[in-house]
Structure formats: C-alpha cells, structure tokens
Image (cartoon, rainbow, N blue to C red):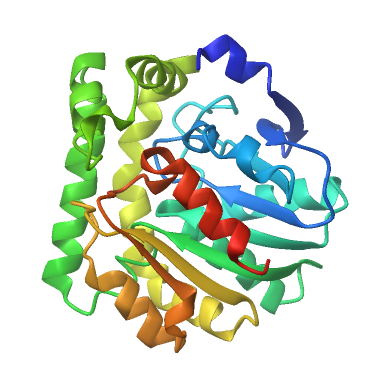
Length: 288
C-alpha cells in the first residue's frame, strides 16, 4: 500500500496541543483498540483491518512521535504521556469499554492506561487485553544482565533502521521468518512514515523507553495483574528479538489457561504482517 492511500484512511484530532492521527472503522458495538510498538505505526495492521472490521470497530492511533501523528522536536513523550493522550482519545470518541491489543512498547502504554483505571482517573473498562511479541519481555526479566542485553538489542536495532532505507529494509526483513512476507512497497511506506516530519530524530529516544521499563516495570506488572481484564497472548514463535519463554512467563505470572496462549509457528516479530489471515482468525475466535 502506498503512503497516499494509507493517509486517506486516517483521521486526526488535536489533543494536548498535538495532532493524533488514527484509523477508525466507525461501525461495530465491540471496539478493538490497537497500540503499536516503538518506531512503527498503525500501518503494521493494514493487512488485518478489512478482515476484522465486520466483527469489531477497529481503532488504531499513531502514537505521538510516530506515523502520521505529531512529532515534537527534542521532546520524549513518556509512557505516561502516551497513555494519557490515548485515554483522552477514547473519551472524545465516547468509548467507555474496549478490548486492547498491544505490541511491545504498546503494552507498557496499556499498563499505564490500566493504572489510570485503578486510580479512578479514567472511566474506561478494558475488557480484554491481547499481548503480542516483546510485550512485558523487559518487565518480566529477573536478571539485570538479561534486561541490559534486551535493552542493547533494541537500541542497536533502532540505530540500524535509521541509517538508510536499504539498511531499514534489510533489518526489517530479518524480523520475518519468511523474508518475502513483506513487499518492497510496504517497506517503502513504512520508511516514509518513519521519516515524515523529521521523525527519524524521535528514534533517538529508545534509551528513554528502556529506562522507563527498568524504573516502572514492577508497577506495570502490578497494574495488569490487578486489573480485571481478560488477558490473551499471541506470539510468533520464531521471534529473534523476544525470548520464546516470555509468553510462558506471562502465562505463569497471570495464571492463564492454555487456551489463552496462541503460539504461531513459522512466524516472527510481526505476526499481523507475516500471517495476517491466521492472526485475524485467532482474534475473531476470541470472545472479545
């Protein structure tokens, strides 16, 4: 999909002095709210929107600093900032009950939204939570060396994709079990979204995000554990970035049934892009 076609699917709203751009399919009683990962955007989900929109109202924002949303210069939007803005969006849209799907960095934001719920600062019921690859990997690490190693891996990855389009293309394709699962056109659109409004400079804040994981990880785990949201895990088993033990750690920590864990074979970090039909079917079969 070309950038101009993707832009035409978006709408935007001004919140807290920033433009938040988002996808909203508008129809459907049940709302699936999707929070993308660090250095990506709502475009990660373009292959599954049409497959899900007949069953759910799909809302996917571009986080501040990414995609088509505002990219403030020399300012890092913290996890708390991002959670506050997304919560404001849902209030503006008069949505008070949602299921939330989050990927990596997005799961930290989900946990902060739960914190707002637990403190009664947000009238929003998060009915279901679907965690994707890299979610809670840093937070559940009980080894400082492992935490540091994951942090370095993320920082190095962000650095590599910012060098050039060719390096971006090579590195992103390494995130797929089958390299041909993502087209050159989609890679170009993803690259253009990162570069839009001088967005590459925002990638320098990856160390801030990792530091937040170290500082607030225990709080986030407490939030998701104490929230009454049903938790599901969908995980590409061949993810080179996230330890395959993480979904099992999540299962143990949350005391989840096996039926809540979906491990996708021959699939890596981007299951929604690599196996969109199988991925969408899993979601449709969950009672959201």
